[in-house]
Structures are given as C-alpha cells and as structure tokens.
Length: 289
Image (cartoon, rainbow, N blue to C red; front, side):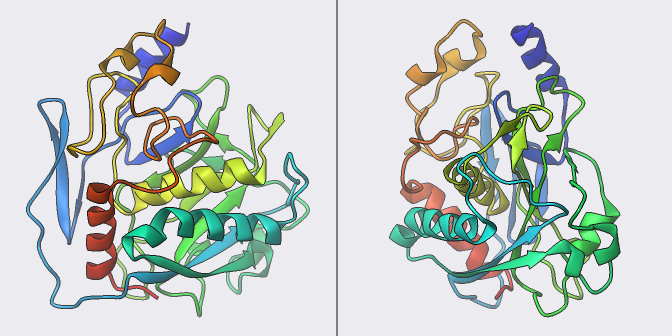
C-alpha cells in the first residue's frame, strides 16, 4: 500500500510542497529573482535576474493562529511555540549572516477584515494544494506588510494522504505580501496530524517550520521520495535508494539534512553553504521587513 501511495504521489504535480510522513513532489515555479526547473534528475536554477535593490538579510515573521488553539503534545502555549520557531530559525540561519528579528503572534479571530471567519472556538483545517481565498485574505494583515506569515491550523487535509500525515506546506518559492502584490503566500503549520488524532510537539512544529521556510526561500528537497529527483547542490548528498519502499530511509546520507523530504527532530542545525546562498539571494532581492 505504501508503494502504491508513493506512485500516486509521483503523479501529483501541485504548486505546493509539504513536510510530512509521506511527502509530495515539488513543482516548477518562476519568480522575479530567478527560476528553477527539473532536468536530468536535478532541480536546476536559472541564471539570477538581479534586483536594483539589495534588501536586508534580517526579517520578521508572523505566526497567525487560525481558529481554536487545541494544544500541543508538550502542552506548550502559543508564545512558547513562537519562541521555539524563532530560536530554531536563527539556529539554522545565523551561520549564513541571516537573522529573524521577531515573531509576531497574531490571532485570526482578530483580523480586521476576515476575523469573523476564524472564531477561536472552532478548529481550522488547512487544505493542502487548494486555493483558499479566506486564508489568502488572512495574511493580508494591515501593518504587517512585508513579513513572512506562518498560519497555524488544526491539521492539514490532503486527499492523496490517507493517513493525513502532512505537518506543513509552502510554495517554492513563496511570495511576500505587500499591498501591490499580484500574489502573496503563506507557510502552513499543523498542530496535529492523522486527522487530528496525533498532537505534534513545539519542537516538531519548529523543525517543520524551518524546513518549510527553506521551501519559501526557494530550496527543493535534497532527494524526493521517488529516489529520482535531487537538488542541484554539490554540498548535499543524494539517496537514489529512497524510491525503494523496503529501504530504510534513515540510512540515506541526506537523512538528517534540513531539506530531506521527511523532517525529523535530529536534522542538521543549519543549511549548507550553497543552500544558504539561495536564501541570501532571495532576501537580498525581495522587498521585506
């Protein structure tokens, strides 16, 4: 069944990438600072188109609690979760000269325009691979233009994942909201998986957050679950055997890297130098706070 599921994953080409127990493919995406495409088993990056501006390598994050906060496996309050995400992000990014200054905790029920759609008494399920105008409106929060937004929901629903094991997802790369944005994107995080039956801890969510943030900045997985697609960085190893469902994925040489498709609690503390170059390029050419 698991092998059949992975083959089904290979047929699914969406605009989103996920962090989950059985994960989905990345997709091609064009962007103003460059683009990437898949050829000969590699994600290739087009030549960069440089912006006339050079923006800061520091940035702010919003953690938007959508609906009811149902609690985590370690009983951490929202503020502690936000602090974990902040510390985990800086652990990964500071070695590359990048810094997350602050995380703003926002409650969707208090949004000035769409708050009524997110009462704090009802769980909000985030749908993987589907457009949601209300969520899109939610991240367009007055006073928080230019900040990268995480949306924390009950769990992530995906009709290709019978176990509902998706812990988060993000566009690759994502687009930061400004009033003149043609597109604006968010990073989804789940408090639970398996149809809401399994609570995630704050550490697990923080680890998922940095993985999805890597996608938002333009990083693909080191290896896809098919075992046939890899990133184009020479400083990340590959795992062709990952496509064999009988293979123990913990034996993959890239298993503990942040951008391995299944995020774990023992991932590398930081990104590789070449991955960090892509992140710096994104931040230096994208207007943000």
